[in-house]
Length: 333
Ligand code: COA
Image (tube, rainbow, N blue to C red; front, side, top):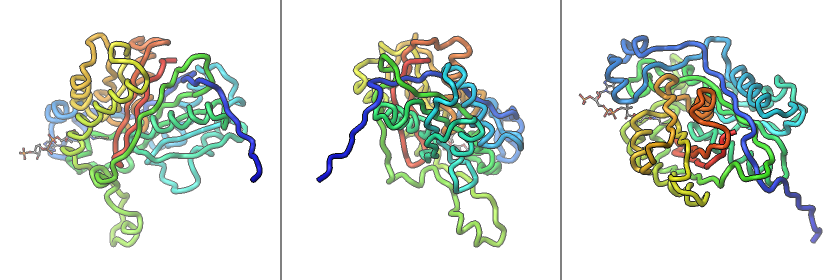
């Protein structure tokens, strides 16, 4: 048997820079209630959402990815030529192939990085972050841009009472690279395929094509079941993540859960017994649920508004269709 070379990379990794892009159209509850026979009051009470962001026609998945990544690279203080990896987490890029990551890398002027998309729905960004960190530690890349991006307005049924008020559009990006200290902790991630149907694309593309009046397939969700799973199971995942990282809730400064629903965020914080002083991201109120983009959008907002500062310890946790989840503790860049 021939011995093969074995390579390794940096002992530690960190988020070196973060950027985000909010879709341009601010849509208040008042604009969507008629189609779903709902009210501003009901939506705010059940979800905490007051407004959401929908993309303008020119704000494509690619455009929002590029804009957020450009800012992240600039803030990381590295030369774009140093970026040798691009991972895009999305479920709303409408070309099945090729991966939008290659086009994003090209538009950013990067020098032929490894570039691919991943599909883990709302948990996609935290999956990408874990992959990027492992790639840098394994020596298969040095600086990796991770982007979470969605244009869910394209695949949201504006007449579906169970989901029309929830979803939104935007992008968030980070640069992951080598670091002297561990700035990205071990990931806790997994899936529960038994609950595959709880949040899903309603129709298979082949059924769409075969239909007499083809329509864009839409997302559908069994809201009650998703709520129970997220509020209770994800608090356990959060605790497991702290345990694996070797810290407790008392060491946390910031909590950035997936921005699905304000009641889920509150239920998780209660179940985790988060100390009062921990800053909790509540971007969902203004942005809605932007799936893979929600965690980096919310974290960047806390940083830009001075509610999270460089060096803070933040727990990220994301969960959604699959059901899939991923969580890790990071140092705020
Ligand atoms: N507007 C007004 N009333 C509505 C409504 C709407 N959009 N949707 C449902 N209702 C009504 C129902 O008809 C029902 O009325 P009834 O009690 O007279 O029968 C009542 O509200 C409760 O319906 P239910 O479906 O049980 O609502 P809910 O309390 O579960 O809330 C969600 C619905 C979607 C807000 C909630 O399930 C939820 O937030 N789930 C998690 C969703 C989520 O975050 N998903 C993303 C994960 S990635």
